[in-house]
Image (cartoon, rainbow, N blue to C red; front, side, top):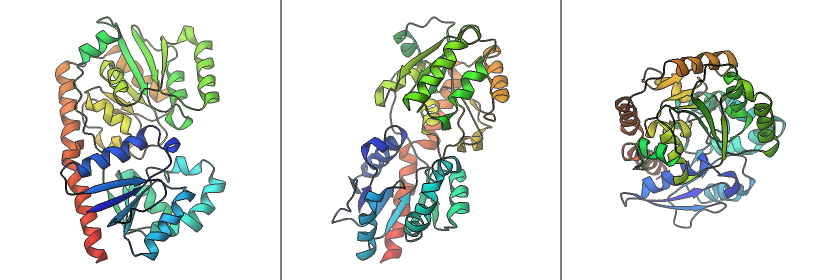
Length: 341
């Protein structure tokens, strides 16, 4: 089977979207039964199925029309671009575009691929589309870096504790709430590491706020964006990963933290709320008061053993390794292809 991925331009794929697309491509091709080609505008001439990634892409319109003219079945992955928080941003422009452009393309698809129950609910409520398949994202990296190696790499002492934020620095992600919630907590030897970048004004405003409140905050270190292999030492060295986000259709950074056994604190606005019963996954509302309580609990009673980290790592790899998930994608594509014949 030949799949033609129609993808966003590179500047719009930075971070989780780029990883989601290309790890899926690698997983699908890994057993030799599929070939996947990627293009920002065109359908491959030998494509059996087209898979559009993302919305709000005028450069994709020609490819949609090509599929419709030549009866090529296609699917769409919105990648969270219709989540309520994202849709409210520039809604004056997105609402008419959705109604007249993207909604007809979504209705013409053989299926809409979403990554979680929360995205499926939101997609159905906004578009009234019924042909929705829930297919999680996965990981395939075999991370050889041990936690002790990672901490040695950064020169950390045994009793140093790291609270990690690793994501885009964007109003949606809630870093402002995290910094405010840290004020006057019993942080002791804890420090906050911020790994990521974002709009310059937003980052500068957060740095200025943190500097003004520095006597009431733990030490804060800003590392900038770290992609691909460079991010793993930060995740492995951390004692707690925090993503106080307002909206995530999946939350790939959460999975990356779990992948190395680092416990996470995140919000009900992520699909990880469905796994709140798993030790090491803590869910709390994304408001300053709740975050402060959760952080205070972590700072005063943090006893996370290497055995517990291993159990968390094993759980994530059991449920989210591409070796387990890719067959679900294979079956979805094959069902679409059979129904189109």
